[in-house]
Image (cartoon, rainbow over all chains, first blue to last red; front, top):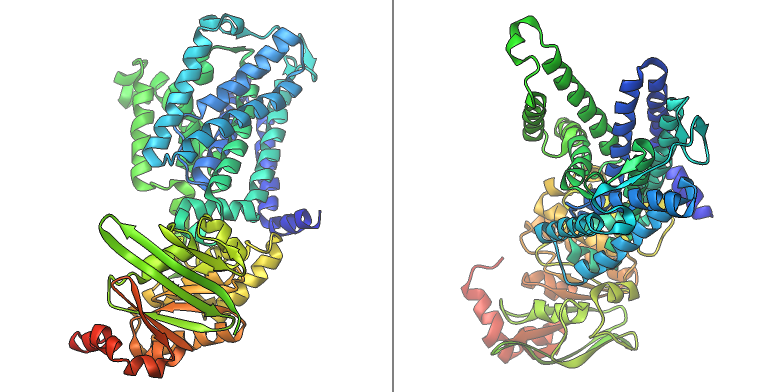
Length: 339
Length: 244
């Protein structure tokens, strides 16, 4: 217990930042339309998934290109436990997290035990996510390609995590889950576990020469990572009230998950949240630009898919300017001025 | 003197090459044992066998009464036998302080305790001014100090130093020699690979000479310097090439 208290002590600065960030994010629903709120909720769901990705790929340095696997397992667990067994999604979220963590441990053990690293590990994670997508696409028990629809509870229902009358609540509950996950990540970064993950990311031989078991560090990272990303997937089901194999396990889901921490700052505490904020603002700006362009750009009005092209272009520019994300860019500038 | 580390008849072959050939050594408690020999003599391979990075084909390694030659490196380090690398391996994406924290955490799960310990190791190695710098920007001398600070932070009982003086200026080298001496005075036994003759002669209690993978001679520095086999195999050779 005293160790936990010491970790909390060491984290006090980050916990204060967290309080500020949560307060600001918590104010969003007060002044926006229902549509903007749903954009913000989606952003937060993928921020949460990115927080999970960042534990394995950012801190422990094992680049995953298939986090849709955990996202989808979380999403389907919530759907199946509710529709088949009438289990509350609260329980479903936790069970989904545990299943995803177990999946991570099993597949991670096989991959790491046989020394998969870098691009090969990334490909393995991609293949595993695709394998799950194809399996669920053909599994009648989970609705195969049609997917699963969550029955409406009607009105606000805390047990079912459905807030038809007060959609802000859905956002705030999610924000609470994000906050708890961030507390966990902050604690990890201040603890021995976080230090061993960083060491393994930087140099496995040096890490083991200092008494670190690299396999164990990676296994810890993959299970925590899978758990958090599965929470995001489970909440996604609750938000859409629907899930199908593409929404759960599709390759674009994996990309959407890893893009946020990469834009915000890989291996930083705040990167995934910052990246999610940047990407959703950017997405909305390009969309509205194409919908209602200024007069000198009339030609682009309503051109199908142009907003996505713009989005992609700006993304490429950002990545060229800041390959280690916005926070990484700031850190490098600070270090340069310090030296 | 009771020995804390024994290498018994260790042999390691790479294909047709016998890199370490039937080598036996004892490292006494609190001793500094220097290991010298020409490039390619098998010194670093011997370190790899002791630290668990490689397994010997034959022979055994006993640390504090326990056979360790089949253990993975992290378990050996966990028991208190820690090495540094000839080609230093700093965690370059981390700051100097974070590097040393990795070592400090090994025996101190409490983050504040390990922080205090890491700081005292940085102070001991003179790295406090660079504590918050990224490790990748350090000079070679500082990277070598960092390698040492990180290893020391694990509270080793035996430390294997692989050429911590190589590439340092004479001043930097002299400072490093003092650091190594005070590590021994702190109760750590050391196995030291070194090419800088003057330093290793002054530093070591005994010296082992490795040549073509075999233990050519072992004894007090003064004896080794006079040993005709050693002079022929190594020291003579050393004078033909430019000294470090």
